[in-house]
Amino acid sequence: MNRGDRLHLILRLFTPERPQWTADETAAALGFSRSTAYRQLGALVKSGLLETLEHASAYVLGPAIIELDRNIRLSDPLLRAATPAMRRLAEEAPISCTVLLCRLYRDRVMCIGQEERPGETVAVSYERGRLMPLSRGAPSRTILAQLPPRRLAPLMTTIEAENAAGFDADAFRRQLREIRKEACCITRGEVDDGVVGIAVPLAMPQRATAASLGIACFGAPDEATLARVRALLAAAAATIRASLPAA
Image (cartoon, rainbow, N blue to C red; front, top):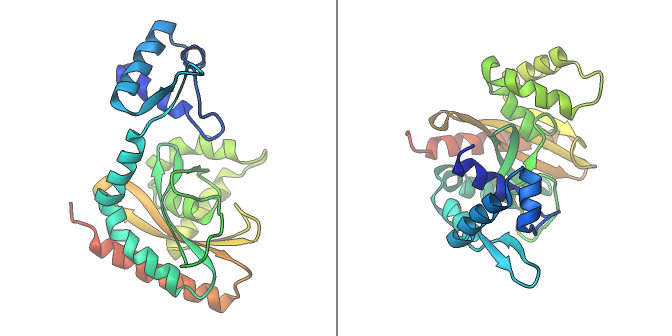
């Protein structure tokens, strides 16, 4: 394992459920020697990615994380292209909703952008920076539906683990083919109770990955409302694709 891998593994230990780690805890969790843990933690503190809590001899995420988050918000081509379209979509949608921009990240799906109707704040499981299951929710399935078989195959182990015993992999693949054909996925209460999810594909060939633009609709939208939302989503996705740099 190289140094970069070790630093990455340490950073991934810090979660909302476990925001503080000591050097001994880090070493035990990752199988490092105590001296290696101290050395890597020290490097992360020096860079500002971690900082120390002297009273507890513990480490927490540092301010460099916030600086990097600001930088990616302002410089990432996808976020720059998508944000204005997402804000318009949240305003124009005929129902209370949250607009979501998601992409594939390793073996999970990550929400990288989120916009709400002005004056509304409703919590949804898909939120910026949160890793979500591969197989549940319209944004995730829409991403999977874009993947060629050679890229989907190694993810099937994770997908099967996310689902209960008796999961039918062949039926799931057929469902993905139908989503790809329709260029849209609609789910009802699959991630959050009472929330209807709608998502359309947002291909990013220049990044060799897949993304989706989605809406979490609150309430009980009728078919006419869903059709309107789907049309607005497709138009917004087309606007975003047209705004992306060619390379």
